[in-house]
Amino acid sequence: MRPLKVAVPKGALFEESVARLAAAGLDVAGLADPGRQLTVSAEGVEYFIVRPTDAPIFVSYGGVDCGICGRDSLEEAALELVELVDLGFGSCRFVVAEPASACGVAEDSYRRLGVLRVATKYPRIASLYYDSIGVQVEIVKMHGNIELAPLCGMADRIVDITATGATLRENNLVIVDEVLSSTARFVGNSASVRTDPRVRELANCLAASAV
Image: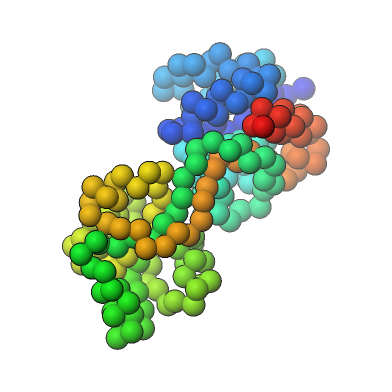
């Protein structure tokens, strides 16, 4: 039987993801120090080390059978896959923030112009949120340091992900609303979930270790 292909996210979710896979009974010795390797083979499994935002793509398009990523990545990607387990770690939240010195400015701007300009790395999540509250927005897609956008007058507000809010406070931004909360999720390719019992077995083991 071919090895089970599993996407493991780089960055903040990596260490706990590896620990959970180990607790579920998989051989993760090769993930202890993968260096620059993007794939790691073990008994019965092949790991693909990917960006968290790319994990849903690998799973949905069948590059891997299953994987771990944050709810934020799932919501932004909006691809066909099966969410199997909320793993409960990697907690963070999406928030709306603006400069502390600009209290009320965005509301005034919206009343005058009928639109807010919002900078974000997550255009789909931001658009869905503002659609849900009936506010028209112009989304400015950025890739980093979006805290600068309202500070230089390029945007009224930002929608960003935060764990503690420290970066926002350090840049004199205040949270004015919450969009959604996010934790790590175990997801499967639709076909693999139907045809490969190992995916469901791993999901059950991960669910047990998440309790």
